[in-house]
Length: 180
Image (tube, rainbow, N blue to C red; front, side):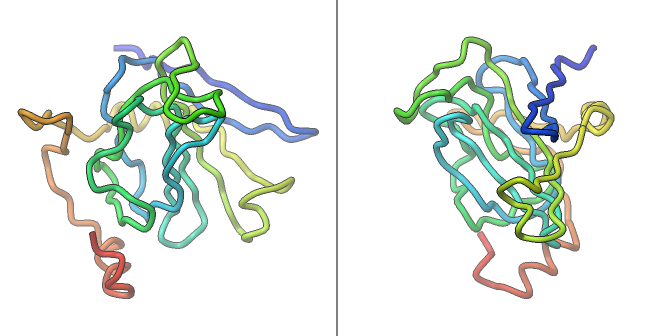
């Protein structure tokens, strides 16, 4: 099966910001790419319902946007939650491009995701952002994706195989308030 993705680059001055848009049906589970901490969760007028996850070492930030209207995230997910690679974190939708919250203002259902490298906190927002062209990574992840199954009687999906990530365990030992 072909990878249903569109490769985009957004230009700011002399820089290009790379991101992908997967075109799939509403409600398709979104899988966490790398273990980390949920740093941003909520409405953004451009990205709609979105999730931002920072790697434990702080050097990578994953952005997932345009999630499903009314039920964008997996139950219990909040800012500060620790997530493991392969976990279901949200659901495909087409929210965004509206100052009013929870609006489907985009015709095509898709997931917008990007990977930002952060070597210094001044790069997180501003003119020095570094976004990765994730095309090859996307193909690899598609071939090696985590299997998920619907939880009967709910709107939730869950991974079919649990995974013990030593980085999650180490992070949670350092800060017990991060445990879900």
